Image (cartoon, rainbow, N blue to C red; front, side, top):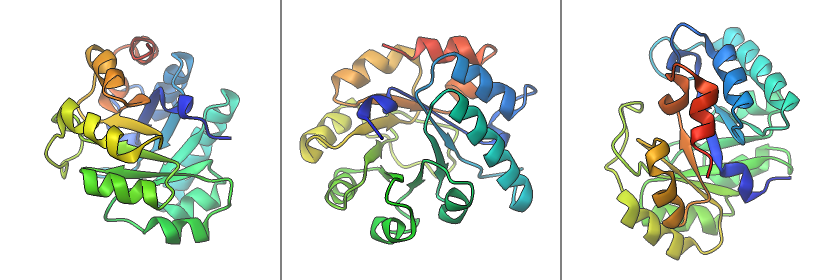
Length: 209
C-alpha cells in the first residue's frame, strides 16, 4: 500500500546513469543507504532495450522486493505490467493517466510529472497517487528538462494540489532537502546525487531528514 512516506528518498536510475560500479551494485548500495522508493528509468544514449531492458528491470525489482521498497517503471506501461512492478511513472508527453489506470492493475502506484501549476492541478484532479514536481533546480541529467520552478514554484504547487503527495526533482542534493521539505514536498527525488556518488549508500543516507 502506497504511503506518502515512500517518497522521502526516491531514487531514479537507468544503466546509463552510473559509472564503473554498474546499475545493480549502485542500486544495492542505495537500498542499503535507505532509499524509500526506486524508479527504473532506462532512457537516453546507451540505454538497454528489449530483452536486456526487461532482464535488468526484473533483477532490480527483485532487489527492491528484498528491502520492501516500491519498484516503479518510468513511462513503459507494458514493461511495468510484464515484470509486475509496483507502479509506473508517466510524463506529460506520455500516456494519459486515465488510459494508464485502465491498463494497469488497481494496486499500481501511478505517478505523474508536473513542470508547472496547471500540470500539477490536472494530475491531482485525475487521481495521480503522487506528483513529481520540477525541475526545482537546473539539472544536466535530463537533456529536455524544462525551466526550473524553484522553491517558490514548489510552494505554489503544494497550495494548489492540496493533500496530494508530491516529490521534488531536478538538480537536488543533500543541502537542499530541508528547504524542499519546508516548501511542501514529501520528499526528494534524485538521479546523479546517488548514481554517480563514490559511495551511493552514504549519499542516500545524507538525503534523509
